[in-house]
Length: 247
Image (tube, rainbow, N blue to C red):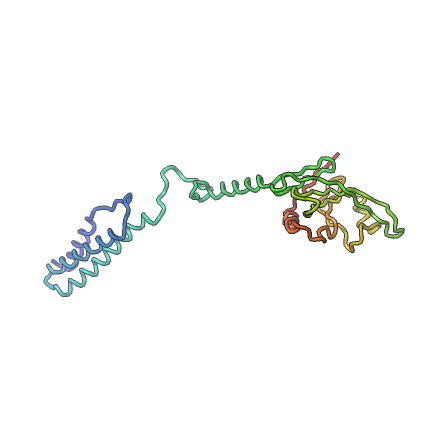
């Protein structure tokens, strides 16, 4: 028998091996047994050849290659996720819990929404988003005064709404969230430096405005560094105030 016919016969015998059962666990011991059987098969096959010394080496090499190929065939379906028979969602990759990435984003978004509460002021027309930990907040009303730049006299005034943390106590104060309320005319006058508020060299910082009012953060509102001022800074970074037009 010619060499290539023997190789062909060897290939046929390897291909005649039973197809692996993918539903059973393919362990390392099983792999070793298959490899050893293939090597023994190659050695016995080489002994039958007249050129024993040469064909033995070739047979062993071919058997090793065949073992490697068979090993790859057997392990490939195990290591790779097999397609689901129940149909797949093409909009996003499935997670372990069966939720697509897109759906997970929606869930996270909804979770963020439920982690916040909303303070709504219908008198001035705005809403303010707060962390859920502020659920029992209080609204305290104070006032601001505008001193004329030229005459050093009181010419303007308005309201300051303080959103107060539920754990605020007189003996242990926490940082409030102050919101100054200006009419559009007052804000324009302040911008022209016709009056000033307090001794701060800078004016209030605008948070938003609607058709009648401007909402602003007082200058140096956290100058005392009360407990919780860092949390207030984080809250303000997310643009919590959303204005609404009023009649």
